[in-house]
Amino acid sequence: MLKNLPLNVALVLALVIGLLVPAGLSGWHQLNSHRDVMTRELNKFHEQTAETLAIGIRDPMWHFLPEWGAEFVSSIMLDERIVEVFAEDTANDFVFLHKKIPQRIANGLVLTIQKPVIFENNPIGMVRVAITTHQLETALKEEQTRLVFVVILQLGVGLLILLPLMYFKVLNPIQLLICQSQKLAQKQLEQPFVWNRTDELGTLGKSFESTRQALATLFQENEQKAQELGDALEELKGAQKQLVESEKMASLGGLVAGVAHEIKTPVGNAFTAVTTLREKTKEITELFEQNKIKRSDFKEFLQDTDEGAKMAQTNIEQAAELIKNFKQVAVDQTSEAKRRFNLKTYLEEEVILSVKPQLKHTPQVSLEVLCKEDIELESYPGAFLQIITNFVSNSLMHAFSEGQVGHIVIEAYVKNNTAILVYRDNGRGMPPEVLEKIFEPFFTTNRMGGGTGLGMHIIYNLVHQKLGGKIECKSEVGKGVEFVVSIKLPV
Ligand SMILES: Nc1ncnc2c1ncn2[C@@H]1O[C@H](COP(=O)(O)OP(=O)(O)O)[C@@H](O)[C@H]1O
Ligand SMILES: [Mg+2]
Image 1: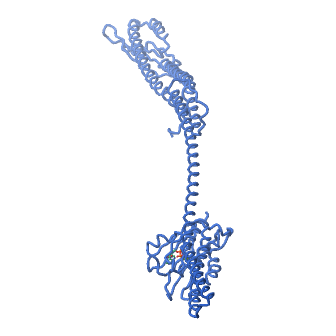
Image 2: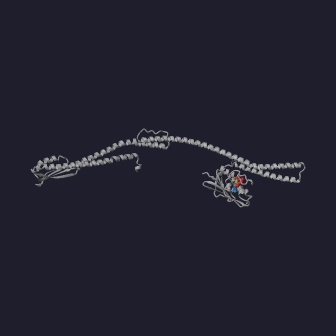
Image 3: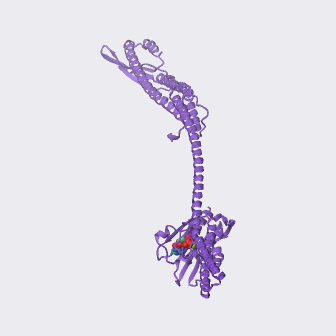
């Protein structure tokens, strides 16, 4: 509770308690000692009065003259504290004098003293004096009122001095400090904080000003640095773009060189075949013109022509296949528009339908599509078809040996907001050195059988560039292959 007390309330409370407690205690002590002194004085007066009376009444009592005594008693009774005077002639058992003023008792207590009256060493009577403490009480009460008044005055003057002092010296500057620290927190650093005072709070305020300056400089520097960083980033992006471009150019160059190299062999072979064919034709023409042609020569010629033409045809076909595949490498050539489609339906209907002709000649190979859930994609279905067609033709070309019972599985599901397409066959698989290179253009293990080495490269480009996904391949010799294509779905 004390923690949550506002500063001004706490200070006023401290002042009030700090003034009231000592003033109250000292007042109480002062009042007590005053009461002691006054009581002692009153007792002394009482004693003396009784003594004076005992002595003063002695002669009138001895001579039995009450009127003498009455005068004396009247003079004693002038003092307002005396309430009653009583004198008795004990020898004759006779009330010698008695005077009483009861209204003098008022609010006080009544104290009584009795003394013997001695004449020539013989007691002849006694006197009694009663006094009231009324005056003493009144005096003490006045004293008390005065003390209370002094304490209140002290408190008032103290507060009157302290409150403005506290306001100007503490509360107001603290308010200002709070305001300035809020400005610092809100990064309002333009206006300087002006502090003219030299006390502790002034020092604190000035250190706020130093903080403001330091922060302003820091922010300025930061802004400058951010600007520089932004520029650097921009430059870096430019450099990266350039790098990507030159990398593209390099890979294009490599590709072109590869194509030239790949095409050189079949074209060269075809050329050789055609050249040989022409030479043979020339030979037979000469024989024909000289009329030397024999039946066996012509038969041989026909055989050579057939072989040469066949060889030229195979090689030209291979070159044509290369060019066809090579055209696919440039993925962007397929001008299909992006559209929304259901992957499950697409795989189960269109893909199976398109792949069927490929499988027609291999009835021992079966294909299965496993897709439990509906997967909605905003993408290029044609690219999926192209990818799967290439996978299937690779399985048919590389995976299964003659007559082997093959099984191909295409699976699709969604995991961690990613669409995953898995292609699996149970063929011969591949060794690590093949696995390592399968995505490289022109890498093939079946050049003799007409492989171009572009199928996997096309798949890679389609997945990465067209679909914005990733492709992974797992395979071991004898354990088939597994390709995993993953495409992040929009959140
Ligand atoms: N399903 C598969 N099983 C075994 N090997 C495969 C399979 N798919 C691809 N390969 C290997 O990857 C190589 C590259 O494939 P690809 O780029 O399509 O070229 P190509 O089919 O013209 O040989 C193939 O030559 C083959 O060695
Ligand atoms: Mg292939």
